[in-house]
Image: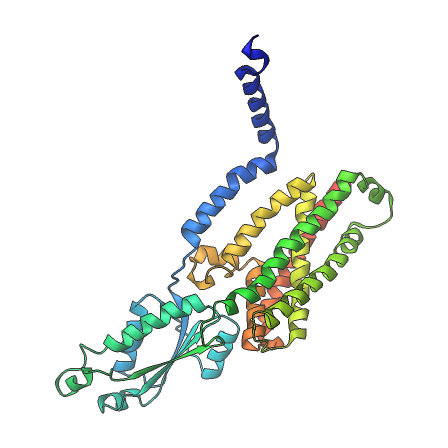
Length: 380
């Protein structure tokens, strides 16, 4: 009995060749095979940094003396702190921190150098946005090192006695919004946006491609319903589903993980609407570009990866290179993370939340217009 009756390398090779041809013809699958590994390599290799540096910092130097400038320069030399050259009042600096535009505020009192040279150990206040617990911890450690060594060369002659321990001034740390640097306070509010992103995009993309696969698209084509009406009719049920998810995650966050709800829950519900709609719009766009449900699901990975990695969910946003931050500023999840953490941890109001709401709305309108345009072409 011939072995070839049971197994043939020639027949095996024919099947393998056929499968490669199928992969090559399926452009979406081929793009995922090549694109996803490349995207992961670039994002993890260049954009992700677990020890972020060059973090935005505001210095309020009321003393403006040689010693105060030397301390600020010492902080800058650590590479953890990037100072904003624009002068700020304390109220303006507080607003910048609440809107997540700065991570640190350094207050140097007007009597700093006067008390320093008299051995009175004046205070310098370093306020850190501790919602980014990992970034804050490393930077605070660097600041403490600077505080203990920065004036060793300058304190000579009659001032040499000030070099003895303790240091000639006290660096007081205020870890704001998350004093104990609890990592769950950073992750759990962010999960609200991540879950909505993953579910809203996929279920909407599948909803419209399902119409095409079942052959009901022709029925829609024969009706007087406009493309925008079809799309809105399909997304409204999923908006309700999105709000159910928001409610469940908020309840678990507050009662299971003890996340402090400092701000208005109703404001968070209001802010969630444009974010849910924006992700539904992305799903609509993917559904119009895909020919079946599998392609729609596969295409969504090209949106998930940068959203999760470049939004500030897994790694500090300001620790990424500038080009990665530019991409992150396009993504709705970046702003929704600031909204959820701002409302839950900082107690932000509508006035301080609005700068993070309108970019989501702009994204939503642009993507929805693209999706409606492609859907109209599909009907034609």
